[in-house]
Amino acid sequence: MPDTDFDFDHYIAAFPDFPKTGILFRDVSPLLASPEAMKAAIEGFASKLAAIEIDMIAGVESRGFLFSTLLAARLGIGSLMVRKPGKLPGKLRRQSYALEYGEATLVMQQDAPIAGKSVLLIDDLLATGGTLVAARTLLEQGGAVVPACAVVIELMALKGRDIVGVPVVALTSYD
Image (cartoon, rainbow, N blue to C red):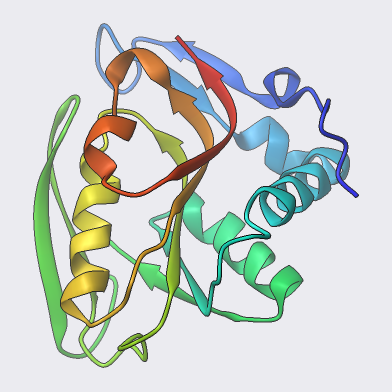
C-alpha cells in the first residue's frame, strides 16, 4: 500500500527562468534519483488508478516514458511512446499544439496496437494542457479510448485540467 502522505514536493526541484524568462521549471530529476520517491510515485499512481480499466500506458516524451514504463511493468501491461518528430520510424500520426512558451508537435506510430484499447496517458507535468490534449488526440485517432491522464505535477494556476477532457490524477500540485 502506498504511503498517501509521501512528500513528493521534497523531490521536485524548481528552476526560475527556464527554459525562458518568466517560467518556473519544475524538475522531477531528484524524484527519479531517489529509489524511495520513485517507488512511492509508481505505487501512488497504481493506487489512484486502481478503479480505471487500463490496457496500455502511453508516455509522453521524454520524462513521461520513465513513469509509463515503470507503471506498465507494475500493472503487467504494455507501454508505448508519444514522441517529438524525428524520433520514431515508420508511418506516423502528427499533432501540433501550443506550449506555454512556444509551439511543438508530437508523433506516434500509425501501427501502434491501440485500436479498441483503454490507454492511460502519462507525463511528468500538466501545465496548460496542450501536450496532453495533442497526445490524447493522437491516441484517439488510432482508435484508443483514453480514460484518464496521470501526471506527477499539476500546475493548478494554468488550468490545464480544464481542457484535457478526461479525469487527471496528479501526485502533487502547485498554484
